[in-house]
Image 1 (spheres, protein in one colour):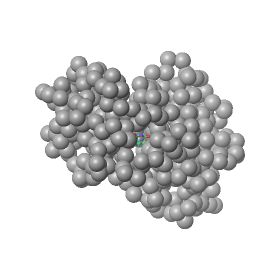
Image 2 (cartoon, rainbow, N blue to C red):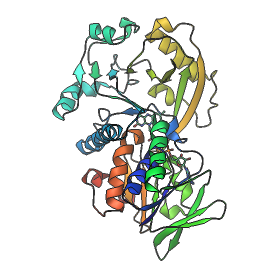
Image 3 (cartoon, rainbow, N blue to C red):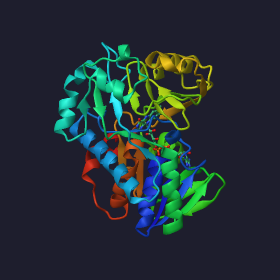
Length: 372
Ligand SMILES: Cc1cc2nc3c(=O)[nH]c(=O)nc-3n(C[C@H](O)[C@H](O)[C@H](O)COP(=O)(O)OP(=O)(O)OC[C@H]3O[C@@H](n4cnc5c(N)ncnc54)[C@H](O)[C@@H]3O)c2cc1C
């Protein structure tokens, strides 16, 4: 079977890799570089504990967590999945940590659903993160996820794409944009690149994330999206002992390599315009830094070194849209927030559905058809 996968983010790379392993003739087409889209500007927490809107959404994301553990164990030298644990706490009325008042039973629910999570007190927090100012910590509702962590998504995507090329003959086309789908009698038969090249295939998978609708060339093959803006600030390198990812009412932060700290916050994101200039002097970046220094006063004197903004690929109802598009045969689409969490699982699931014709139960409630 010949398959084209559009977009080499964390999702497209995973799908192309798993399909190429089956012996399918896979061409992965990427407009820029592997992993350079939204996957490069992400908090990248691989988790299901924030996905409690329904049991099925939790199960889908937990399948994502498990698939990342599997693939990191499967590939020798895997260096992209950091799992020192994540701590989440709240203060009165704050939603910045993603932990609102309705979540008082969150811990019990997570435990009953088999998710590793435990309650911790201030003394344990200061053992885990000695530089955190304990006055910012609220014992009520603090949860430690000992097995959680984050993914260096571009590193992951690059490693599996290289493996697919080297071991499974996958063809990678970078620096070429898909202009539109090629169709015949209600079926997708390939793609047209912006330089006029046509690539033909039996199946087309659109994993172009927030740009998914730009790659199809006809609104009929699009999906209704409700994207949101995210801003991430990166500090200068420092000697901080920060080891875990922290989701706090002030700021969400985590180490980002070479002593840099990645900073973001849900409430600040809501104030960032879509065309915000991504510069260190941006007021939102400076606000993130001052909140970080409040959280860890030992960081006084640190600077913002870089800022990046990204647009989250989110279907209109906020949930994942993974499956065949009802307007066109042989055309499959994957647009979802939490794509970092879901990437490795979607690699396996989309392979099973497109190559083996097996329907994957975890995806049943998240089909694009619900919009049509
Ligand atoms: C601030 C922020 C925080 C986040 N935090 C988390 C988190 O903690 N956990 C989590 O799981 N998720 C998180 N996400 C979401 C997650 O990052 C995304 O869901 C995920 O990266 C999407 O991956 P993707 O492969 O679908 O898209 P992308 O990574 O954007 O990949 C799509 C690729 O398609 C390419 N492309 C686009 N158009 C074309 C075309 N016409 N032809 C060819 N190629 C094309 C692009 O260049 C790009 O490389 C966060 C996102 C943001 C912005």
